[in-house]
Image 1 (cartoon, rainbow over the protein chains, first blue to last red):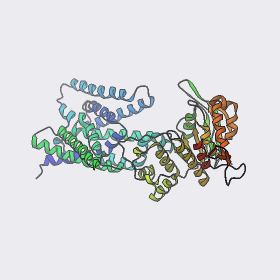
Image 2: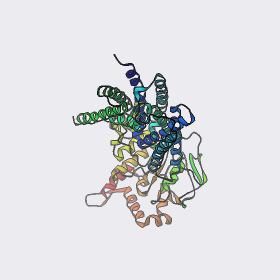
Image 3: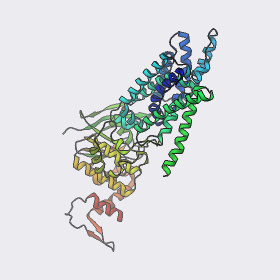
Length: 265
Length: 266
C-alpha cells in the first residue's frame, strides 16, 4: 500500500513531468537551457518577494519569473549585450538579491534548502491542485500553438515570411516556461528545475522520428524519473528532489546506451 | 495587368551605411524576375524588405491584396536535436494531406525522401523539399534566395529547369536572387542588376551588354555569357566542328535541357 504522502508526492511530480517533457523539447531545440536556468535562479527573489509582500509564495515566484522573462525578451530585441551575458547577469543577481533580502528578514525562519532543492514529500493537496492547474494550462497552450511553434523553432525567418507571429511565439514559450518553473520549484527546487526540462527530453531524442514522438516520450521518461526518484528516496533515505534528478539522469544514460545499440543494428 | 509585388523608392540603412538607395521595381503576374548583383550589393536586404521581414527606412512596398508568397530561404540548417521527417515538415504550419504532400515532392523530384529526416538532407535535396513546401501553399509568387548556392553545376542547371517548368505549368511569378547571370539566363524574363541602386534592368541579353553591368562584373562575365549563348544553336561533332542541332527551327530558343548538355561539353 502506498503511503499517503508518497502518493501525493508522485501526483505532484507527475503533474510537473508531463508538462516539462514537451516544454523541455523546445528548450533543447531552441537552445534555451540557460534561459530556463536564469528564470529558475531568479525565482528565489520571487520567494523573498512573496514573504515581503505577504502573498502566496508561488504567486511571487510566478510574477518574478514572468518579469525576468519579459526583461530578457525586451533586452534581447535591443541586441546590446549577447544573450548569454544578459542571462548570466539576471540569473546570479536574482539569486544573490534573493538571498540577501532573505537575510534581512531575521524574524523569519525559512527552509532555504527546501526552496533550493525541493521538498516534494511535503506537498499538500493545495499544491497538487496548483501544479496540475498550471501544468494543464501550459500543456493546453503548447498543444494549441504546436504547429506554428514548431515552424518558428525550425526557421524563424521562414515562419515570419509566412505570417506566423514569431515574437508572440517566443513570448508564449518564455511565459509557459516561467509558469512551469514556478510549479516545479516545490518538487525539485530552484537549482534543479532545468534538469527536469532537459534530461527527459534529451533521453527521448534518440527514439523519436517526429517532434510529437519526442514530446510524448519525454513526458513518459519524466514520469518514470519521478517514480524512480521517489522510490529511491524512500529506499535509501536520500533527499527527494535530487533523487528524482538522479533517476532522470539514469534514464538518460540508459537511453544513450540503448539508443546506441538500436542504431548499430 | 497590376503588379503582384512592387517597391517604390525603397531606401535602407544599417549601421550608418546606406545599403539600398531609392529602389523601385515591380513583379508582374507570370513573370520571372532575377535580382543580380555582387556580394554586398543589397540583394538580400531588398528581398527581406519585399517579404516584410525588414522595414524600409524610406519608400514603400506594395503587395496585391491577398497575395500568397512561397518563400524558399537561402540556407536552412535544422538542429539535429529536432526530429522531423520531410512529410511532417510539409505539414507546418498547416496540415496538408499526404497525397498533396507526395504530389508536391514528386513535382520537385524528391518523392523518395518523404521519410528522410530533414537535418540529414543535402543542400540540393533540402532546396527541393523547400520548393515543394512553397508549392503546397499555391503561391502567386515564388521567392527564391540564391537557390543554387552550394549545389554543383549540373544540379544548378536542373534546378533552374525545374523552376522554369513550375512557372510554365502553374503560371506563378518567380522572383529570384542570384549572383550568376549566365546560369539564370534561359529561365528569366527580366534581370534587375543591383548595386545599392538599380544599375540597369531589362531582358537578360540587354543587361549583359549594359556598361554598368560590365563595370560591375567585368568583361569575363560577358564572355561567359557569350559562350553560353553561342552554344544555343549548335553542338560539336567529334572533331570539334559546330553542327546545327537537329529538329530545331532557325533562331528558335534552345531548351534549357539542350543548353545544359552543351555546357557540360564546353
